[in-house]
Amino acid sequence: MEDVFVVEGVKKSYGDSTVVDGVGFRIRKGEIYGLLGPNGAGKTTTISIVMGILQADSGKVEISGMPHGPREMRTKALLGFVPQQNALYEDLTARENLRFFARLYGLSGSVARERIEEVLTAVGLADRADDLVSSYSGGMARRTAIAAGLLNRPQGLVLDEPTAGVDPQSRNAILEHVRALADSGVAVLYSTHYMEEAERICDRVGILDDGRIRAEGTRRELVDTLGERDRVVLELDGAAADAARALEELPGVHTAVATENGVELDCDRGAELAPRIVRALADRGLELRSLTIHEPDLEAVFLHITGKALRG
Ligand SMILES: Nc1ncnc2c1ncn2[C@@H]1O[C@H](COP(=O)(O)OP(=O)(O)OP(=O)(O)O)[C@@H](O)[C@H]1O
Ligand SMILES: [Mg+2]
Image 1 (cartoon, protein in one colour):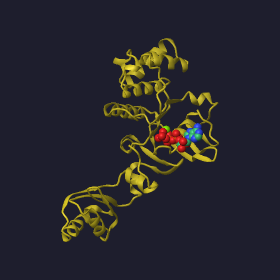
Image 2: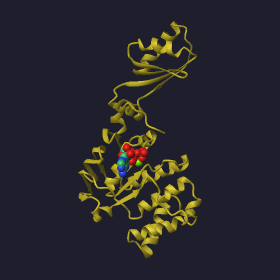
Image 3: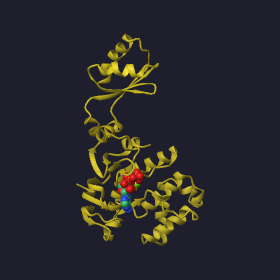
Image 4: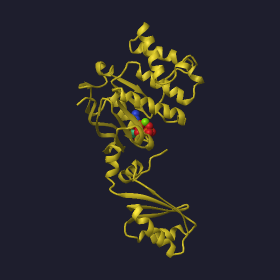
């Protein structure tokens, strides 16, 4: 077992409110672990504890087999961090920012120069490195922050919502960099509230809600917990409420909800049910414009487990 991150039973309260309530997970070398949760779920607090920025009330964190916390410099040196808010000097260039961070890591001279080139290339910013950060797009600034997190060639990289507020192209570039880093052996802790991202790059996902990991596994494992349910979306010409009432009577339909332009069903095997849905509507003279079957995804899992929708 090459666990880089071992987190067990971590708790943190502010006054009467417990914001991280017994969180634990392990992340192996080369693995991307997604912490998926809505606003206020406790992602940043968990990450601050994992980084040793914040002291947990209880629980433990180990990095590469060594105890870790705010005073453990040896393990801190093994980690790279990309905080939720970029910590960059806008009136310096990316290269100047990286020189400053390199000095904080105790890197200087030719070693620092090499590392700076290495991380600029890794995030695809080498050709813009001498422009002021204030002239960058949100995505470029984010990539500069990621470059800073890579300067010490970390064994464990922690990214707190790295693509929030970033244009789709930069977002894609960031996701690819993170995947490539993991493929080179880095263990990655990646927080997000974007389902598609979690589905696309995370090897395993922990669903965080109200300070607790409510479910954990690969996308497949999580989706399989829902069994063979599907979400079926119907577009109708009016009479959505009548249609929903009629469809809820069908065996295999668990819930039918009238929406703005049709009905949404939570049901068993949509493909088998589709002909019966069409017939039931036709029998009542209701016109069906389209029927789409959605296989369960993380969105469905999240809704099922928490009863909430993620933002974004
Ligand atoms: N210093 C603090 N004092 C009091 N409450 C705090 C403090 N820091 C965080 N909280 C509360 O803890 C909860 C979790 O916050 P946290 O920032 O960890 O969530 P998050 O999942 O990162 O949310 P977001 O997606 O908005 O970044 C929130 O209810 C927040 O208000
Ligand atoms: Mg946060």
